[in-house]
Image (cartoon, rainbow, N blue to C red):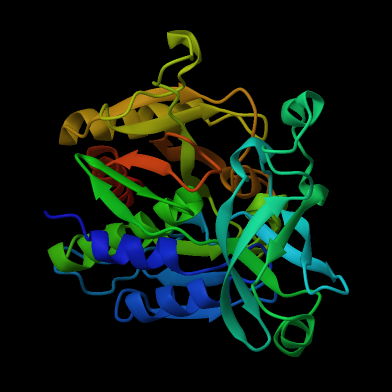
Amino acid sequence: MALNTKLLAELCETPGVPGREERVRKLITKEIKGLFDSVETDAMGSLICRRKPRGANGAAKKVKDARVLMLLCHMDEIGFYVSSIDENGFLWLSAAGGFDTRNLFSRRVLVCGKGGDFKAVMNPGGRPVHIASAEDRKKVPEVKEFFVDTGMTAAQVNKNIQIGDYIVMDEPFIEIGDKLVSKAMDNRVACWPGIESVRKLVKSKSSHDCEIVVAFTTQEEVGLRGAKTAAFAVKPDIGFGIDVTLSCDTPGVPKNESVTTQGDGFALHIKDSSFISDYELVSKVESIAKKKRISYQRSILGAGGQDGAAAQQAAAGAKAVGITVGTRYIHTVTEMIDKKDLQSACDILAAAMGELK
């Protein structure tokens, strides 16, 4: 089956920082028509999509005490909010998510303002290289030292942009070799299989005994906030946290720190700083992958977390596991994934939804 890269490109290029995911939600709502029995938006802005158990012909069926299998796919990308506008019309920033400022120099950005979307550039304050001192050149600035230049006068800026408007990186989605590259792969990479795995179930008219709930969640990058409230409401029996993970299979990183290797399949996520996967569920997913000949690799992430932790800890708790896609250069504008790994993540989700009871 050919990858629907057009959808992934649309997802990645649609702006949506924590707390302002409404454009991404609108795109997903359009894409999932006919895939679910009910769709609702909760108070936090997460999109909760439910599909009842199905028989062999794809028709709804009643299953006594059907278990709830929940996929959690966060919609937000890291970005900024406008925190102040100075007398010259320069925008100063408040980060929404974790940035390594070494990757922020001389970036093109998109300001999503009250008057529309405006292309702009971001740089740290200070002297350019021609007149910088040796000490200036060594300094790595903090986020608070970066500003955005819209090219507009102060009057034009104040007419179109206000404190609280948001800013995202402005880079196109591209395909190079076997790879896909874009800003916001974290975590539109999860939204894609959240849609496509259910589409695969529907097209094949596959049966499933669990009630399937796919939650496209908000504000993960600032603390799993949307996932916590969505999981509390859904009360899943089984939770799948869908996300990116590190793929440091690149120069300068020892092999034992690579986390994943691109092209080896989806990552069966065992542990991070937010949760530890249920070992029995890990074994079941692994068995399904082997049975279906779906490429995978096991992974542990030393730091960081994902929405699976929220499902695991909701209400009386749930068995949870992470399904992740190894990604190079995370939290930059060149986030890179391998097509095979993305497809295998979609395949294991569709297979697991069909087989778990």
